Image: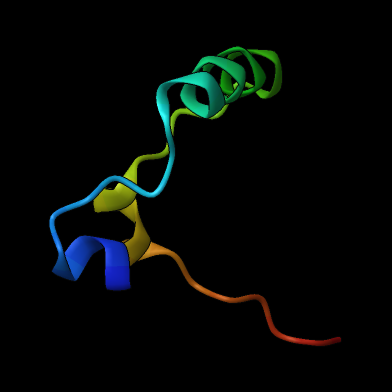
Length: 44
């Protein structure tokens, strides 16, 4: 959150280069805009 307040990215280019292939491997298509629609599961 502190990075966002300062308009700085939390990840450098080298880290993003690792994240992108991992997203592809796991089929992750979610973005930050989806976080407002996620629900936590209930126990049981």
